[in-house]
Length: 206
Length: 186
Image (tube, rainbow over all chains, first blue to last red; front, side, top):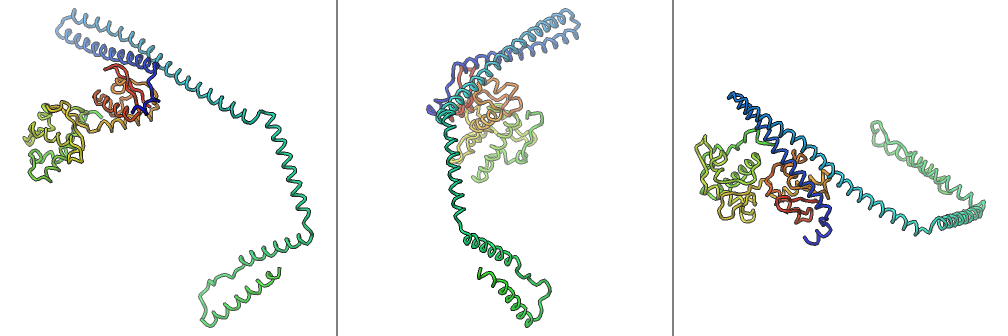
């Protein structure tokens, strides 16, 4: 318990907020009591009127009026108190935000420092550009070195590959109609097989 | 949520043997379980947290006037004793607890145990974004913000017990003077 709570300390601010909120609660309770009283005074006034006791009824109504004025006053105070509480709580949030901004700025500054300032970045970018140009030069030289014969061979290989793929797409369709008699079936299969072989043959020398 | 609708008794309530301690141990166990459930839902319905047995044995809970059957005080104590026992010891799983120790006249009825309330409170704090906010215990129990919550109007002692569960878990801190406690959730 002690360990987990060490970061959850109750600060003096928390205590001050609690005091404010307790005051607010007390005011609310007070208002509840007064509201209850005014209701009762109305009842008393009604009862007195029923007994034809005008004086007492008037007295009760006057008391009620006075209590209602108290109620209005307390309402204003309650309002002020709640505003103050809200302001305090909002300021606390603002404080946290400010702290967060501060930390963020520090981190950002530290990172910028690590990058070595604008000059360093410019220098680095220049070097990158140089290295890239150098690399491009090398690849150009390499591609220029290929002889015509090599190029032809590459072209041939590409053509062979293309034929290969086409042959795979031109495979014979499976028969859709009803299968013929057994003897016929054997023959047609042989023909198709030969056809496939004939097509495949030109691909081999390439 | 309040007791505007009358309490619906379960069917067993109209079954006369329900009011007599059963000799067969299996039947007895089932009887105790049913009583435990009935007491819990009765207390939940009436938002009762502490049940005074002296009053309860005269109330419809323990006194079925249509059957003219009642649970005497001693039997009511037995039922609550069983409810207070943990499940491992063959009891009702700590659904009750004597408030006044050995006198056994008033009992907490835990239709929600403090740990369960603690979970509900923690969820509410999380969902309403009130972490790191100082709240008074009074506003938790009586405040307008908790009007729609199940614990509104809860017995303050139960609230303190539930909050203390959260304190032990390191999720809250209770401070302030007695009777004017505040709580900060983390």
